[in-house]
Length: 116
Ligand SMILES: [Zn+2]
Picture (cartoon, rainbow, N blue to C red):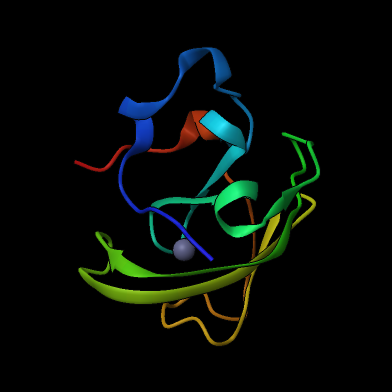
């Protein structure tokens, strides 16, 4: 389980930023930017037992990522449930946003706009 939904940019240890499709945070925390929620979802091996295949270009996170929280994009609480496999987010049909059932390539970190 999870996670966080706000702009993490102020919290990065710059030495650990990977300018690909995923970011690594301290203590093995991995974050990807969710295009459905327009925010970062973070997983951690310590906090919630998630695994990361170590591939910053085509990351795989296991098991599935479940997030329930306030989405600044939707201005309401959403449920976001996905698999991240080989750099692609597979949104499951129990999502309460419009991406449920869709597959979307993880956006390159460089291209992610910051929320105001
Ligand atoms: Zn999401």
